Amino acid sequence: MIKFDNVTKTLGGKAVLAGLSFEIKKGETFVIVGPSGTGKSVTLKHMVRLLTPDEGDVYVDGENISTASGHELEHLRERFGYLFQGGALLAWMSIAENVALPLLEKTDMACEKIDERVHNVLEMVGLADDANKQPSEISGGMRKRAGLARAIVRDPDIVLYDEPTSGLDPVTARTIDSLIERMQQETNITSVVVTHDLHSALSIGNRIALLQGGNFLQVGTAEDFLNSENEEVQAFLESQFITKRGSWERKQK
Image (cartoon, rainbow, N blue to C red):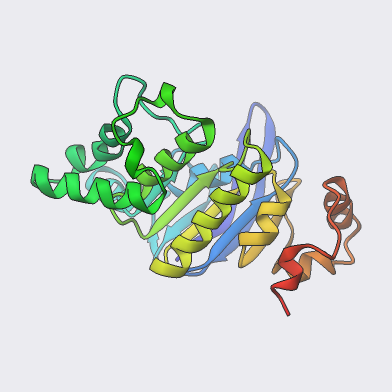
């Protein structure tokens, strides 16, 4: 569904991506992990053409989004939902109004249909009773869930998540993980997640990719990661106190 072909990107004189090539399959949850500043969010932004490769190409279902423009680019972008790191809600709008915004701006749906769709997605993320609240009146975790509702309100084929659990307590972070898992299971949506949270990655990822030095050191399942003989992969696991007794390993059996 998404393919990077030898993508190179230099920012501020630093080679952030160095000939990065990989493919993401339809319906999978692909998680990109790695230390800060290694290019995880840069990789995500290339998928929706918020950044353009210096060299190489990015394809969405065989269409080159790296060279697309005008209506073609707009059409490709409409296939994506994007959950920004802080939720990116508009402070002067209610939660329901924030979620409805993509429908109002990009469709000609009748108002009653918009209200129905907004209610359904807010119910899906557990915020139906908070629809009329302002972003300032809800917690950080609830703002993330509202941002997720807005990202999926138009039924995208692909959802991009930029640090969905950052700044959240462990219980709330696992709630977000559960939502991502449930959406993938119920709708077969393709999810691409950028995170520092390796516990989250191991729990939700069909495949996990460790980005370092402008390329992937390892791409594989949670079990592949836990059993990797790559010293840098093991160092990254140990930095977050990962052992082989996590719930992600039990699920493999």
